[in-house]
Amino acid sequence: MNFAALLATVLAGVKIGACSPLGPTTYQVRPTHSLKLPTEAAAKLLSGDRVVIDPGEYTDCAVRRASHLTIEGAGPGW
Image (tube, rainbow, N blue to C red):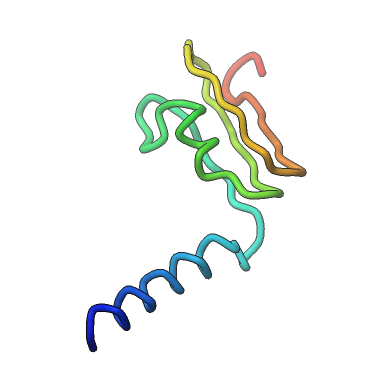
């Protein structure tokens, strides 16, 4: 397989994965998780996705253009 064909295959896979054919995804934000900040989750969001944010102090902000998002707090007192 030449480089152009390999690149086309990789890009096709990325495009298919971004469509989220399996439905909405839930992203967990917490200091001990791979997503430590709400902005890290926001960068991945597609329409219909959900973000659950553990208690803590987060000093970042994000803007994401998607519809039907659910963003909620988790843990004691929520």
